[in-house]
Length: 207
Image (cartoon, rainbow, N blue to C red; front, top):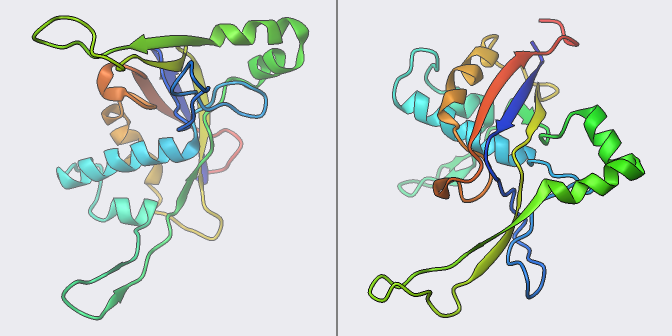
């Protein structure tokens, strides 16, 4: 198998961060494509699944053989602090596309007047502030605003990097660790981006 479809069913407000704000009003804006529609970057998905695979491998899961993380996702080069030997980086064998809305839905929202009128409804503004525990009042200059996205279902593609030949069961290894990914985007520890990830075999690629 050379390709699989990853479905990301997001069940709460989520924030695919950009590191940018909107001036004086919102401190953090969401990541969107050229069409103005929300998307979850492939590098974000790749990082989350890599971390899940590494944890499962560290815990000795039977479905995740030793060295799965390094072979499927690659490893950075580093200098051994105890010798002059250079450890060369190894390339990853899998690549991840951005997670997007259904193609027909995205086309309607981006390319029709009626659809474009609905796009602002995909976004919300969320404000929070710090509370001083000894007084119960808001701390000065602590108000923070960010743009969030309503719950959506997105799909991404996981494919084999051209020229690479991962283990035949790479699909099963990835599928096994998906339950460890329970949220996506920024501020996951604060309840944002709760999600369920599922994997399906691509019908367009031969096994």
